[in-house]
Length: 307
Image (cartoon, rainbow, N blue to C red; front, side):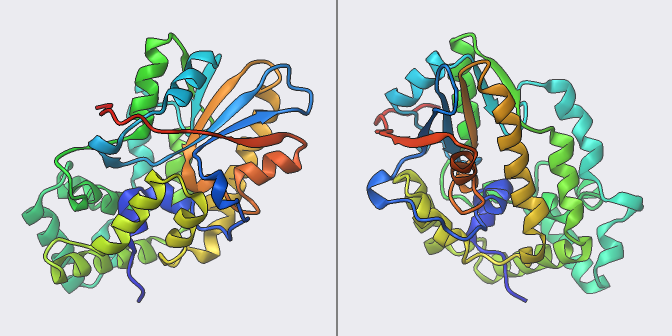
């Protein structure tokens, strides 16, 4: 079985958002920030590629990005990170359907291996709870410990803080429950097998998983090279190739359809996983096909720590 690559370690959704075939974006346009105009819009909106987990020292915003946040009427993430009620309600959607547990999906040997690993290494949630979660979500709780930095951050957190300082409303393109439910498209057994594969790799390398690949991918993100980031992500094989329509393309189309209704009314900043931007079926290309002009904006990062 092919193992999970470093792409998963950065973010579950960043990985899922970077599995498309590349639609060439010129290397001299390396940026995470894009302007959406034309097609009858009275004022532009903006698109920004995030990464959902990175070292806190790298959680930086450019002055151009800060200005976009200040000018925007509203800020949209993939989900509404400002909705505590929704965050609490989504917990039920994190569980597998039909009272399924990891023990139902794995051999006795593999189940004990996973249990021992979680209990010995520790995680943010007890194993008794995690073993009822969709295995990919259980695996994602291990990702923070794999990053070689003292603390981690979400780019969304940084953006939301600046948005709040500017009194901007924060909203979501889809619900957290929908995101969690999408994972039901991947067979639970496949997810469980990938969890075992990941743990085997961690144990083999004494807690380190593909550091070179992970470092290269983080370098691509920090250099804002979407084409390179996607190329690296495509090396990761979680066996989800048969599920890209529901995991990726349907979501991208849904987002663009929603934006077509929202953008004529106000100027938005839309911040989603960077992997959703490039590709023939990526958000940039879908917006262009819908008649909008999508152009890169210089996004020179400040050399100051955000968090």
